[in-house]
Image (cartoon, rainbow, N blue to C red; front, side):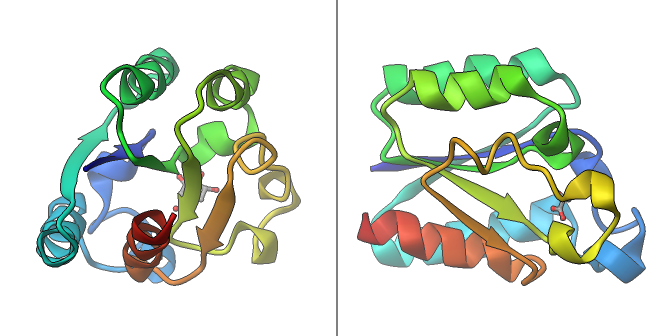
Length: 142
Ligand code: DQA
């Protein structure tokens, strides 16, 4: 089974981006960690990142088209703005798990609304890179 791991804007800068909030691990580090665990679970990971909202919409559609087992989605700031992502999650039957490194609820008020979370099957937030690992664990058990 394949699990899509979709990452939105600015997550390509992980490692150097506000390390006091997001930590020092890069997206490549997270990919490596997920691949190791996926191998143990008999899963395959397809990890992608884009700064463009429409790419994320297309990839959600693709996840369903290729029969992905689940999508782990860290939509970055689009989480808090994107009705298009909300609708795309609703439009597919593939389970989508919302992932965040930080816990948006402890941060600025503008991060307290999640259009992704309102449509997602589940949310994992606040564990840093381990959020992705926990979400993969959840996806495996679906
Ligand atoms: C984030 C939280 C969002 O509020 C923020 O815009 C991000 C990263 C996280 O993983 O903690 O880009 O999704």
